[in-house]
Amino acid sequence: MKILAFDTSTKAMSVALVEEEMLIAEKTINIKRDHSVGLMPAIEALLDDVHWQPSELDRIVVAKGPGSYTGIRIAVTVAKTLAWTLNCELVGISSLEALTAASVYPPNTLVVPLFDARRRNVYAGLYRQEVAGKLTAVMPDSHRSIEDLLADLTPLDEPIRFVGEDVPVFWEAIRAVLGERAQYDAQHRQVVSAHYLARLGAERPAEEVPLFVPEYLKLAEAEENWLQDHGDMRDDQYVKKIKHLD
Image (cartoon, rainbow, N blue to C red):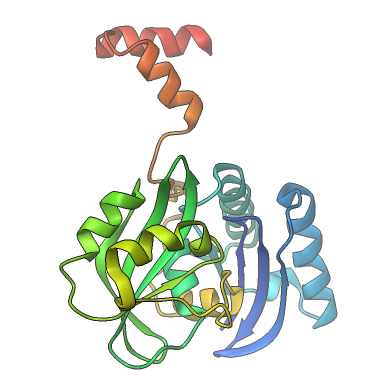
């Protein structure tokens, strides 16, 4: 099976080509840039480098969120367009799960992947790595305050590995609550690897392309502000207002 996998859910962009579990090519750029400009040229360049035709692809695997609204929309739109145009399979993987899978930990390790969601909020999950590359979700991915996350982690009487380049932003708060149980190794990969994204996606069932949607885990800020200003409106008034805006 020939797989194209990519992620643009954070400032990093990662694209990989994998065939039968073997990494053929991968490109990761971890600087802030316009993913809408860079993603398709990166995909085309990688395909050209390994002399693959787009028609040879069997499956598209995309990180479907959470993360940057714009980045997720770009990746999911490209993934759905390619899957539909090329008539190949489409699989979406949690960006947080993909981040967790990018590093190998000792068996039975609890891992918290984390993205900064601003205003002391985070996108976070909790996974247990049973053996290398095999993950089990202990808690569902969520958007919440760092305080709420730490309150849920406090009863877990075992070491917890944190992963993600945004962890240092919250490290003081994390250590204040969890103490020595909290572990963070900056030498581990702290951004999503499209290679490991592809490996996760190779084992999942394909999804229906027209019905595939991102997983933002929260409303966009503009939507939240609008609802705050119009919280007293009935559902039918809300629908009429949206139609009027369209």
